[in-house]
Length: 205
Image (tube, rainbow, N blue to C red):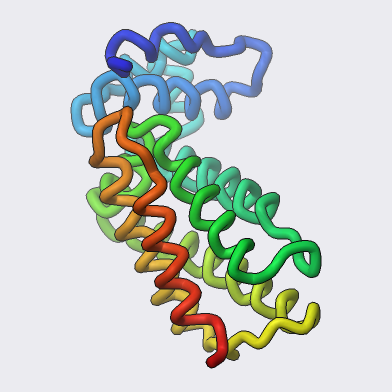
């Protein structure tokens, strides 16, 4: 599907708080034309508000994008958490479900997924700090999953936080390939590769 024609089909709910509407407006604009080409006028128009109102809430486009990035990152963590079922499924199955949930979320809208994975690195020091915060949160989620698996009797390695960060980094690299693939490209091979990688790292011999 062509994102340039699909983005306007997602109207902003004007009953939502203004900051949420501005984030949604930015998301729609990014899906339509990419972050670099998006203007504050685009965001205001798609949010159903004015540029003056935009500047009452955000200093610039980058600050709005960072807010959107944190919002989407929180949603992604919720999706990954929902895929976990400690004690109800083998760790190998849970790792596969985590990989699928992670990649499916980011490819649900490939333009937004690309902004999440790639464009965050173009926002200078603020983007670097925001990305590091999110990676740390994903690493903490992975460590929590491993602790739950251990409590359920699964033999897993005890990873340090930095080692968990390395695993998340590998998933982000797979995500980059996923969002750069054609819209109709299946995720199965990428999910399988990410799953095997995580199994090799976290499961004890």
